[in-house]
Amino acid sequence: MKDVRSSAVTTTLKRSGRHTAADAPAWARTLLAALRDEDITNLVFLPDTVMGRLLALAEEDPFFRLVGVHREEEAVGVLTGLYLGGQRGAMLIQSSGLGNTLNALGSLAMAYRIPFPVLVSLRGELGEFNPAQLHMGRAVPGCLDALTIRHVTLRSETDLATIVTGALKTCFTAEEPFGILLSAQLTGWKAEK
Amino acid sequence: MQRVEATGVAVELAGASPIVGGVGNSTFDLIPFDRPANFYMWNSMGMASSIGLGLALARPDLRVVVLDGDGSILMNLSSLATARAAGVTNLVHVIWDNGGWEITGGQPAGSPFGVDLEAVARGCGFLKTASVDTVAAFRSAFAAAMADSVAWVIVGKVAPGDSPYRPSKNCVWLRDRFAIAVSSQRSADECEREIADS
View 1 (cartoon, each protein chain N blue to C red):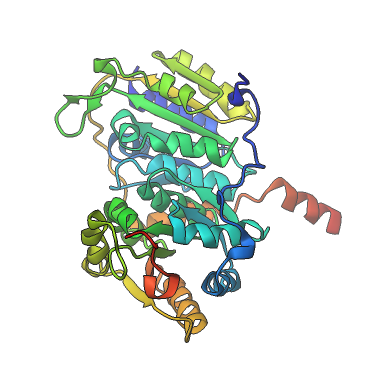
View 2: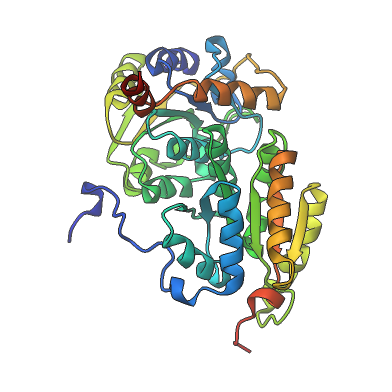
């Protein structure tokens, strides 16, 4: 068996997995266009199915760099390091993962005033089939409120570009994280019952 | 090996390279060697390695140093795998191993139970690693790491003991001072462009 450690990291691996750019939904195109317009080049992610569709589109675009983390809290640190080094990034996670970020959001990003949008795919709100997604999903707005982190919830294509662009601009003006929550009303829920 | 003495060696050999301090004693022992290119973390235990990774991604022209604690990296072991997957080559990650959570009263963790952090780093794909327990050996390993073109993890066995030093409590000032120091280090590409333009 080839020892992959003996070589440079394979850059040809498709980080967005089985999702394809051609199948990317309209909302994903709108979100990526808004991120690009605000010079947000780094997408620091721990995927779920919703974010996977957006990441497939981003991966086709050389403007974006995809950085996968293995626990969502890491993303707060990575985004802090990127910002200290002069680059902007966004976090792309699921509602479950927001729970893994909370102390770092409070004690690093808020304390040191590090701006980045936190895109959260909301499970447990509409159309949920998994009982274990309900509680953390419902707690997302309250967690952000408790940390005094601004947030908006995206529900439809109407005004989508305006809301997202506005959130991104305020995020960097405020020099704080800003939650952008993606409802299943926009992204669709899983067919599973 | 005393952590503060080895920290001084790291700052000396780092030159202008940015240094990210971990929570608690790893940061506190940087204070006698204070410089704008030091970043001091007051909380968010475990995040130093991730901050170092982000900085290394943003500035591939710089070698980025992380001075971490064993308790801290045990809280964020996945960041070692993330650094490998991200493919950074410009990260020098030092882990001070005092065998536990020193600042909270010296509770044992990690190496006293047989946890081998160098082996963890190797397992996560770091090609170059070292474990050292003297200042001379640390100097040698750290100098090699700074001169290299791949990422390193160095586990430095240090004596227990709390640091008496503390950084400024103005986090935004710490942020800005560090970001300005890093941005003032122009990349080789920029310098070459400037020479070509002149």
